[in-house]
Length: 197
Image (cartoon, rainbow, N blue to C red; front, top):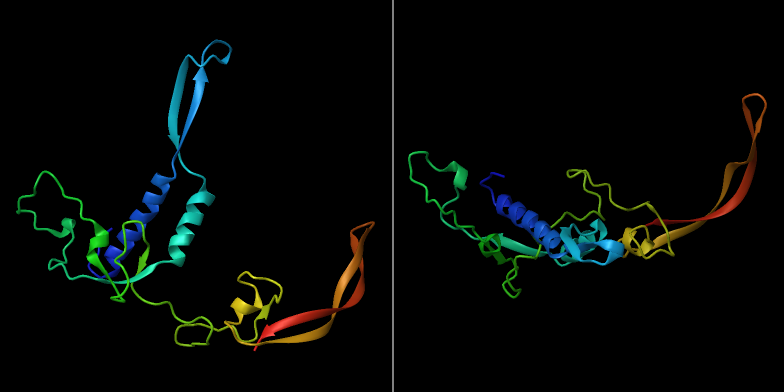
């Protein structure tokens, strides 16, 4: 990756965090060889972790991500932007990216090499904003019994929601008749709908 804007070190750092979580969750697997499974010879190897395990670890880091500012290190050039006539050292020192950041809030601790970081707050998706193309959640249908993202508490962003009982018509009791015709009845039932206000 190449870049000079502050987002460049953020992306590099977060990519490295993902690789570290994969590396830390590697598991050792072994297979025995020998007569009747006697395990006189054992072959072992490292295996990639289950995708769900890495995803859960990164989701926890995402929920606790730190907002940071990028320190001015004086030379915005990346190693690939250097002049060709300048001598390069044979050993390349690996820069620790997390040391380039300082917390946005001075009372917070600096991020570690396993912490995800971000530069700017996300826009508020609860409120309509035509300039950013955000439609907001007013009028969205929600589930009042769910504690997930489709639940009324999260979907409505803590606002009230309206409850209505509607009569709904649907096709039901469909049967296939020879040849090539599907005949259905129309069923009516009452449905409770919750929408964000």
